[in-house]
Amino acid sequence: MLQQDSNDDTEDVSLFDVEEETTNRPRKSKIRYPIASFFHLFLRVSTVVVYLLCECLSSSFIACMVTIILLLSCDFWAVKNVTGRLMVGLCWWNHIDEDRKSHWVFESRKESSQENKTVSEAEPRIFWLGLIACPVLWVILAFSALFSFRIKWVAVVIMGVVLQGANLYGYIRCKVGSRKNLTSMATSYLGKQFLRQNTGDDQTS
View (cartoon, rainbow, N blue to C red):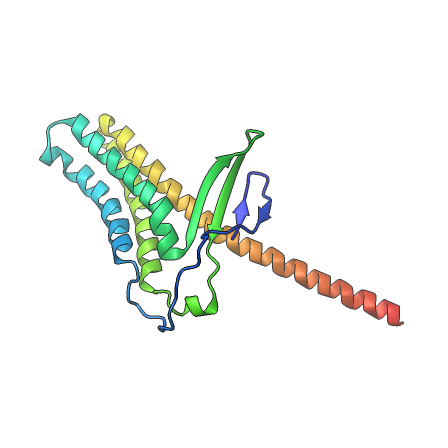
């Protein structure tokens, strides 16, 4: 697991306390977590649909705004704490230490070769599709609200951009951070091997 804080220090941490039970089923497109996959897309799409249709469904701006913000909050919590862990084995959060320093933690699940065979190919595609497409839609809606002078809706669309964009940023950091950590480990290992060979040659000569 990769942990990265504000000082760019990294260390391995654990994502799950208990390893998931796995079988010897080959990799296939069957979805292992259909409920998580459904709510991952449902909550994200429903917020956009409610925003587009709220003026037709209700004449109360307050009721529409509260409904959209509640859906956005539920989506943010579900993607950050549930669907990311189950569907792609990634998780991120922020915590404050005793010295009041902010630390960002990015985790990725280490899968064994046996577990890797049972991972569905469909779930990561569903996860990243919903994760990327919906923030892009909210950015488009934000520009649309500004250009059409729908000032009262600007705060709502900005909330959508911020909440869904935060999850997108966090999960991208999980992926990129893991790759950077692996690259630094490989570079360090090759450097040590190179030094050992050179020091060994010097001693024998």
